[in-house]
Amino acid sequence: MTIPQLIALEKKRQRETLMMIPSENYTYSEVRRAIGSVLMHKYSEGYAHRRYYQGNEIIDKIEDLAVENAKKLFRVPYANVQPYSGSPANAAVYFALLNSGDKIMGLKLSGGGHLTHGHPNITFSGKYFQSVQYDVEPDGRIDYDKLERLVKIENPKLIVAGTTAYPRILDWKKFAKIADSVGAILMADIAHIAGLVAGGVHPSPVPYVHVATTTTHKTLRGPRGAMILVTKKGLKLDEKMGEKIDKAVFPGLQGGPHNNTTAGIAIALEKASQKSFVQYGKAIVSNAKVLAEELIKRGFKLATGGTDNHLMVADARPFGIDGKTLAIALEKAGIIVNANTIPHDPNPPYRPSGIRLGTPAVTTRGMKEREMKQIAVLISTVAEKVGDPKIISQVNKKVKDLCKKFPVEE
Ligand SMILES: Cc1ncc(COP(=O)(O)O)c(C=O)c1O
Image (cartoon, helix red, strand yellow):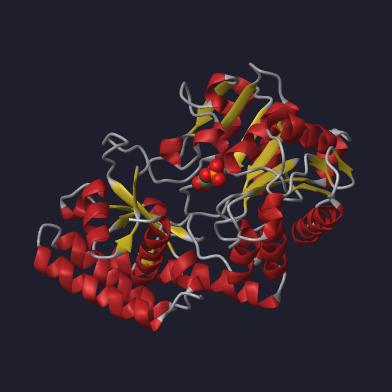
């Protein structure tokens, strides 16, 4: 098959299934046009008005716009929009502000943190830095008193406050008090929740942290990319923090920025500053709350007992199955989620007990609480009848009907 044929098939798949992996979303057609534009032909090593290549007059304007939009939206004095994605953005912060071997502290992967938050042995963050990780409690929540005790013992140079599978509001004030008590740099990784922060449905970390990283393609609905934001507090701690981060991104870690992505980021940030984005953020969260309640009613056990944001982690074991089995059966039914560890999971990571699912992409399609109730029924039907192909195919038909009613923007 040719690549255009495969793209057409993937387009069909995305239209006819419920995209419920909480880190995924449908971007805007304007963003897709920018990504596929001639901007990708240009090399622009350096930063706007300080390039190593000629011919960047227009690219400079684009990068300026993206930086200004980021600063305005998140109310920060400094932004770098060049990181190729979330992992390099986190790497850039560590390389800018730490020396190799310095101690970092992030949330364990199994507790809802990300690989780049110090996962031991197999990631740069756990190999080139000394990593001590904190965990969630068996109920799935961060115990801030326990974290404070650990931080006082370990005295890390940098603490990461950010998550990839945590369904509750992060208490930035508490993180700041803990970090400040040992003079640690506090970094927020808002990759998952950036759109919720922009939409005002999750508190902003900006008044409390020194630096924040985010991807641009999850709840923000932009292209695959990332940004690093330095706050006033960050510049107060180190007036050169912005410059250090610029240098760590280029030439420290990357070469030429992806100008087509930069343009897409500028567009997404502009959209996220509009009033309608507040409605979108609210809808993501209210949809998630309804979905969580309905799943609980139908027998699922949710980490932390529910959600305050866009995602939830559901334990599949009440149905006598593990998360991987459920994720595979749901895929056959057209509901796309990922298998995920539950807090203190007794099962191994490749066959965890739960699934992680969220509402950003279905909310983008315009689905509301009524549809969330339907989806909860479909998910629990699959969980109850995992080995029954007839039921799975009946669910799949209902999924397709639902998807047809809520078309994806061309
Ligand atoms: C909290 C968090 N940080 C960083 C990343 C890494 O982003 P990327 O996959 O773009 O490297 C992710 C990705 O899921 C994430 O959830």
